[in-house]
Length: 158
Image (cartoon, rainbow, N blue to C red; front, side):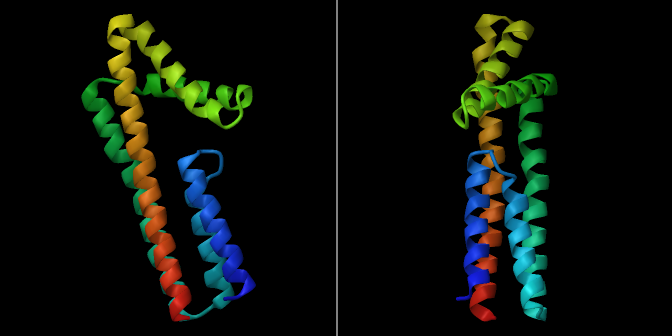
């Protein structure tokens, strides 16, 4: 195993962690590392591996937004609530590093839903939003993990 492959493996691992804890652009880091490996190896196999990984990552990103978005729309949680949650997550990241992202999102969604629906109906909507975000993260992670597995197979072949 070369130094490049170790570096790419570390970058992929950081990307996967970045998906679970949204501090780093996880999928972008995974795909970027695989692309660097592919262009350095510069064989038809490495290009095929990169292409397969790109399809997996891009497909995962499309599904990541489509499926949870539909579930949220079906449950009645508007995009404006998610926007407030996202803005509060950014603020939360700076107030309480790393963990503040989650805290800020939950508080932002809850407050937006209290303003929209009232206190009694806010918590169920907040739970729907959290479930959708969890599903979104799981979809993105699964796609990036599959891409990492394809890359590992490509390393073994080349």
